[in-house]
Image (cartoon, rainbow, N blue to C red; front, side, top):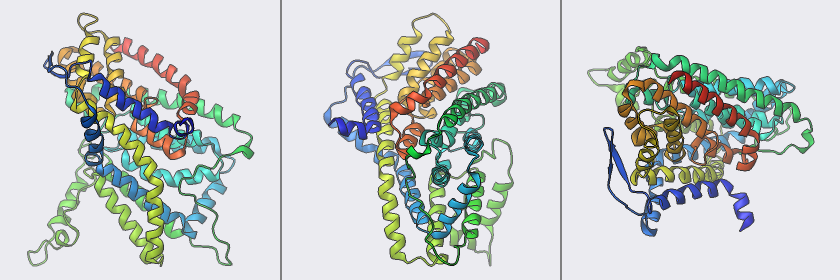
Length: 467
């Protein structure tokens, strides 16, 4: 049993959070905020039958994310078998050897900026297996590789600026102009990145003994098969560039920036007619403009890319299907962790005990108390998984009760959620990333605790200034 918990520590930790969420319903009344008033609906305890029922509902509610991880795993396992892709990974890693520190920092910054801007952060995970394969070949340790990829996403979370799923969700739902908080959000982004970069540089400089290096490439991109003729890499270079370009453009918030060119082009394509017949719509279906893509759309692109590998790479269908199945199997551990995390919010959203807890915390002082709001936001963030649920459960109450400081409320919630995302077992980016790289939670905490302490101090200073 001990070995089981050591091997599956992430599932265990998320499972504990699920159990805590269920047990809270036995002692804390569920309820909601109506304006500034908490409306109690009494105790509604989660029993064994309800526990099992709602645990299984995660597969239904978050099926789009389940299929995304499976499709992505299948695609990269197919890629990992291609000699051209292997050669590409090898070529890039060879050219970057000796430049581990700048490589990790640049990659982390790119992921952080993209996460801070894009509407959805999940599609950005589509680039991570490629990057991880390169870092693995460079013998960058797994925690530094995590910082370069998933760590960048976490920085983009705490320093979110235009992302409609994070900063945009807070400003729009709480009635705050984005311009009123953008400067502070940018400062927070810069400080978080600099701090994480500093601790990563120290770690990389201390990682001198590469004989003890532990492989962590989930899709095992080995060396190309020896042959007299070097495999072609240019199709994979062009394909990856096109994939990155399309994905980034598709998930940037163009409407927020009042840029309509992509909507205009898409509307023209959808309305294009031959003899009054919308031929493009009939053949391809209704196309979504860049800026409006959902997670299903990027999956279609990934599946289509897999088909292209089959057709133009002349890969037998049986080989493609076999590799795809292997990739799906490898992704299953990511899916298991993800579903455990999302079960936490299923319980807390369906049986909302957090409003009662927040009502109790804010009652410790009369009127607005920035530190109590920060504490309450940390508690909510530990169980809410994503920003939209934080806003639904408690954020709107803060904005109504303390309307005169709504801009400060937005920043306080964002800082609390961003800090929590780096360490709570309900952080979807954290838990999926640790699972991907097979990093023990305790090993991550040994590395990140000083960063967390520094961010906590910075957050408190910012709160005292803005509130």
